[in-house]
Length: 170
Image (cartoon, rainbow, N blue to C red):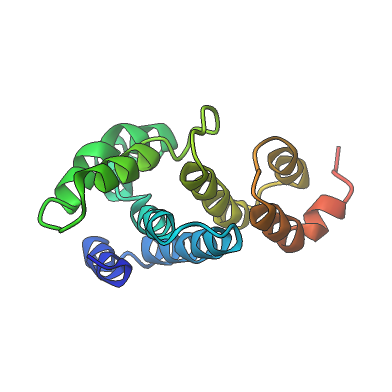
Protein backbone atom coordinates (compact mmCIF):
# COMPACT_ATOMS: atom_id res chain seq x y z
CA UNK A 1 0.00 0.00 0.00
CA UNK A 2 1.47 3.33 -1.02
CA UNK A 3 1.20 6.54 0.97
CA UNK A 4 -1.14 7.89 -1.72
CA UNK A 5 -3.40 4.85 -1.27
CA UNK A 6 -3.43 5.43 2.49
CA UNK A 7 -4.37 9.09 1.91
CA UNK A 8 -7.22 8.12 -0.42
CA UNK A 9 -8.50 5.50 2.03
CA UNK A 10 -8.30 7.97 4.93
CA UNK A 11 -10.15 10.66 2.95
CA UNK A 12 -12.89 8.11 2.24
CA UNK A 13 -12.85 7.03 5.91
CA UNK A 14 -13.38 10.66 6.95
CA UNK A 15 -16.74 10.75 5.15
CA UNK A 16 -16.40 14.30 3.88
CA UNK A 17 -15.36 15.87 7.20
CA UNK A 18 -13.23 18.64 5.70
CA UNK A 19 -11.79 19.73 9.06
CA UNK A 20 -10.46 16.22 9.75
CA UNK A 21 -9.17 15.81 6.19
CA UNK A 22 -7.49 19.22 6.13
CA UNK A 23 -5.95 18.58 9.55
CA UNK A 24 -4.37 15.24 8.68
CA UNK A 25 -3.19 16.53 5.30
CA UNK A 26 -1.41 19.47 7.00
CA UNK A 27 0.15 17.16 9.60
CA UNK A 28 1.19 14.83 6.76
CA UNK A 29 2.88 17.71 4.90
CA UNK A 30 4.85 18.80 7.97
CA UNK A 31 5.75 15.23 8.93
CA UNK A 32 6.98 14.55 5.39
CA UNK A 33 9.01 17.77 5.41
CA UNK A 34 10.56 17.11 8.83
CA UNK A 35 11.38 13.49 7.95
CA UNK A 36 13.03 14.55 4.68
CA UNK A 37 14.94 17.29 6.51
CA UNK A 38 16.20 14.74 9.02
CA UNK A 39 17.34 12.36 6.24
CA UNK A 40 15.31 9.35 7.32
CA UNK A 41 15.65 6.05 5.49
CA UNK A 42 12.96 5.36 2.86
CA UNK A 43 11.28 2.87 5.23
CA UNK A 44 11.25 5.34 8.13
CA UNK A 45 10.04 8.09 5.79
CA UNK A 46 7.08 5.96 4.70
CA UNK A 47 6.30 5.03 8.30
CA UNK A 48 6.25 8.70 9.35
CA UNK A 49 4.07 9.69 6.40
CA UNK A 50 1.57 6.87 6.90
CA UNK A 51 1.39 7.56 10.64
CA UNK A 52 0.70 11.25 10.01
CA UNK A 53 -2.14 10.44 7.63
CA UNK A 54 -3.92 8.11 10.08
CA UNK A 55 -2.95 9.78 13.37
CA UNK A 56 -6.46 11.07 14.12
CA UNK A 57 -8.32 7.96 12.94
CA UNK A 58 -10.19 7.78 16.26
CA UNK A 59 -11.61 11.32 16.14
CA UNK A 60 -14.95 10.43 14.49
CA UNK A 61 -15.54 7.54 16.90
CA UNK A 62 -14.56 9.65 19.92
CA UNK A 63 -16.93 12.46 18.95
CA UNK A 64 -19.80 9.96 18.83
CA UNK A 65 -18.78 7.87 21.85
CA UNK A 66 -17.56 10.64 24.20
CA UNK A 67 -18.93 13.83 22.68
CA UNK A 68 -15.42 15.13 21.97
CA UNK A 69 -12.11 14.16 20.38
CA UNK A 70 -10.03 14.42 23.56
CA UNK A 71 -6.47 13.24 22.97
CA UNK A 72 -6.51 10.58 25.68
CA UNK A 73 -9.73 9.06 24.27
CA UNK A 74 -8.11 9.04 20.82
CA UNK A 75 -5.12 7.19 22.20
CA UNK A 76 -7.36 4.60 23.89
CA UNK A 77 -9.48 3.94 20.80
CA UNK A 78 -6.82 4.05 18.06
CA UNK A 79 -5.23 0.59 18.13
CA UNK A 80 -8.35 -1.36 17.12
CA UNK A 81 -9.15 1.15 14.38
CA UNK A 82 -5.62 1.04 12.96
CA UNK A 83 -5.68 -2.78 12.93
CA UNK A 84 -8.98 -2.74 11.04
CA UNK A 85 -7.87 0.04 8.65
CA UNK A 86 -4.79 -1.92 7.54
CA UNK A 87 -6.31 -5.43 7.80
CA UNK A 88 -6.59 -5.94 4.04
CA UNK A 89 -3.33 -4.15 3.17
CA UNK A 90 0.05 -5.53 2.22
CA UNK A 91 1.73 -3.60 5.05
CA UNK A 92 4.02 -5.77 7.21
CA UNK A 93 2.72 -6.49 10.71
CA UNK A 94 5.75 -4.79 12.33
CA UNK A 95 5.07 -1.65 10.27
CA UNK A 96 1.38 -1.54 11.23
CA UNK A 97 2.25 -2.27 14.87
CA UNK A 98 4.63 0.71 14.95
CA UNK A 99 2.07 2.99 13.29
CA UNK A 100 -0.47 1.81 15.86
CA UNK A 101 1.91 2.43 18.75
CA UNK A 102 2.68 5.98 17.67
CA UNK A 103 -0.96 6.82 16.91
CA UNK A 104 -1.94 5.38 20.31
CA UNK A 105 0.58 7.74 21.97
CA UNK A 106 0.53 10.84 19.75
CA UNK A 107 -0.80 13.06 22.54
CA UNK A 108 1.85 11.82 24.99
CA UNK A 109 5.04 13.88 24.96
CA UNK A 110 6.92 11.75 27.47
CA UNK A 111 8.66 8.49 26.66
CA UNK A 112 9.22 9.35 23.01
CA UNK A 113 11.16 6.32 21.82
CA UNK A 114 12.17 7.08 18.24
CA UNK A 115 12.59 9.66 15.53
CA UNK A 116 9.30 8.52 13.95
CA UNK A 117 7.36 9.23 17.16
CA UNK A 118 9.26 12.52 17.67
CA UNK A 119 8.36 13.74 14.19
CA UNK A 120 4.69 12.85 14.72
CA UNK A 121 4.60 14.92 17.92
CA UNK A 122 6.28 17.87 16.20
CA UNK A 123 4.17 17.80 13.02
CA UNK A 124 0.88 17.51 14.91
CA UNK A 125 1.91 20.35 17.23
CA UNK A 126 2.79 22.64 14.31
CA UNK A 127 -0.78 22.30 13.05
CA UNK A 128 -2.51 22.30 16.45
CA UNK A 129 -0.67 25.47 17.53
CA UNK A 130 -2.33 27.28 14.63
CA UNK A 131 -5.73 25.60 14.76
CA UNK A 132 -6.02 26.12 18.55
CA UNK A 133 -4.16 29.47 18.60
CA UNK A 134 -1.65 28.39 21.24
CA UNK A 135 0.07 31.18 23.14
CA UNK A 136 3.65 32.27 22.69
CA UNK A 137 4.46 30.76 26.09
CA UNK A 138 3.04 27.42 25.00
CA UNK A 139 5.04 27.51 21.75
CA UNK A 140 8.21 28.54 23.61
CA UNK A 141 7.76 25.72 26.13
CA UNK A 142 7.36 23.15 23.34
CA UNK A 143 10.39 24.56 21.52
CA UNK A 144 12.56 24.34 24.63
CA UNK A 145 11.32 21.07 26.11
CA UNK A 146 9.81 18.87 23.40
CA UNK A 147 11.03 19.68 19.90
CA UNK A 148 14.25 17.81 19.10
CA UNK A 149 14.66 17.72 15.31
CA UNK A 150 16.49 20.59 13.65
CA UNK A 151 13.86 20.74 10.90
CA UNK A 152 10.97 20.78 13.38
CA UNK A 153 12.62 23.51 15.49
CA UNK A 154 13.27 25.57 12.36
CA UNK A 155 9.65 25.28 11.25
CA UNK A 156 8.28 26.08 14.71
CA UNK A 157 10.50 29.16 15.12
CA UNK A 158 9.84 30.37 11.59
CA UNK A 159 6.10 29.84 11.66
CA UNK A 160 5.47 31.20 15.14
CA UNK A 161 8.12 33.92 15.34
CA UNK A 162 5.51 36.62 16.00
CA UNK A 163 4.08 34.70 18.96
CA UNK A 164 7.55 33.86 20.26
CA UNK A 165 8.61 37.51 20.07
CA UNK A 166 5.39 39.01 21.45
CA UNK A 167 5.17 40.05 25.06
CA UNK A 168 2.73 37.78 26.85
CA UNK A 169 -0.28 39.60 28.29
CA UNK A 170 -0.67 39.28 32.02
